[in-house]
Length: 134
Image 1 (cartoon, rainbow, N blue to C red):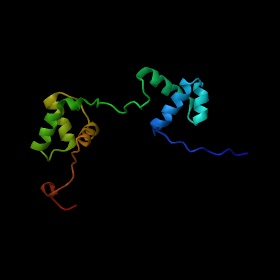
Image 2: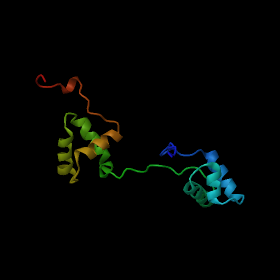
Image 3: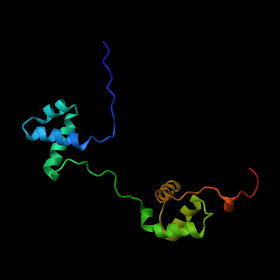
Image 4: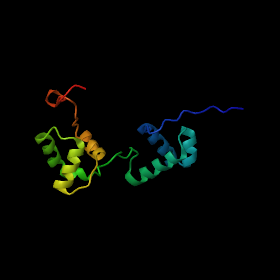
């Protein structure tokens, strides 16, 4: 006999209303697992929400994400200035300059992510035409 496959939504936060109702049932005396089964959420979610309520006094989701851990962020002004002063430098050339001028070891991929965070792209325009036909 085949069992139906449940669709699983990964990464989507449950509504605050649902969280409040689950925690209210737990506070009223229902066990965490019973409340989870009653509202059709995982037991681990009910447990986490009850702990969150006791720690913070609320059930709002904690902030996601965080600060960038890139060592290039400390040199943001220099990198943005270099990009404006010498717009024709390639990523590899900038990586080389970072090593010479700042003494940092970096890579083209980390530099690409840095420029993407600051919404700077390296698209071709009339100032960067090819020297010869393709």
